[in-house]
Image 1 (spheres, rainbow, N blue to C red):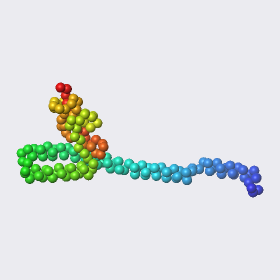
Image 2: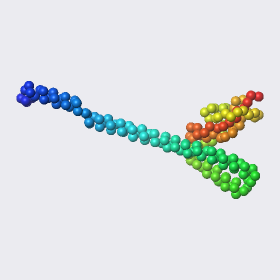
Image 3: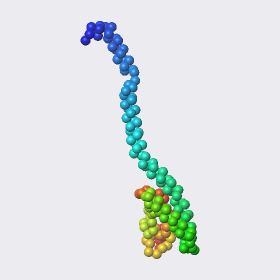
Image 4: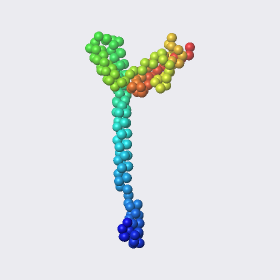
Length: 164
């Protein structure tokens, strides 16, 4: 130690310097914490980005389903009266495109006919009486349901088999 550090006047200056250092913000520590928080945020966004994209696709696909249903009803009417007409062939081409898009996006149709009722996949709209279907099972499908991967995009609207 130097002679200056031993003098009584040096002790108050050292104490003042220590107090000043304690009172000043720790900018380096704050910078490190901010950097770590930003890295965590970036990693979280990178993890969530595919899920957000999937949710966006699901919204668009869900909006296409009513159009698909309307075209399907029109197609059935055309087939009933004019199966070999150019209109019927054009509608067939439209449904091939729908099926292609659905396949590319991972959309599958739910076919609940004859299966046990599951409120996660089916929405009940009354009862029907069909021979050969056990009680409480799906007797009739009013509107098809669709899955996007393993998640429900739209529940199937069904009628259940009533008690005999």
